[in-house]
Image (cartoon, rainbow, N blue to C red; front, side):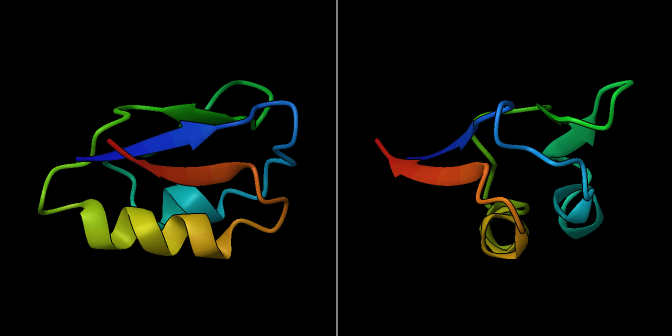
Length: 65
């Protein structure tokens, strides 16, 4: 099972993750990444992976459980 991890200390608030998969990622009032779910379903997994790749600050990672 895929799990997304977000390091809010590294996030620079570019919003690329939200653009890639808004069902998994959001931003708080300061623009910092907020996970809507740690475990994307089959429908959102591919775009969640793309969001991890696109993150300019490398604040996102994927863990396999």
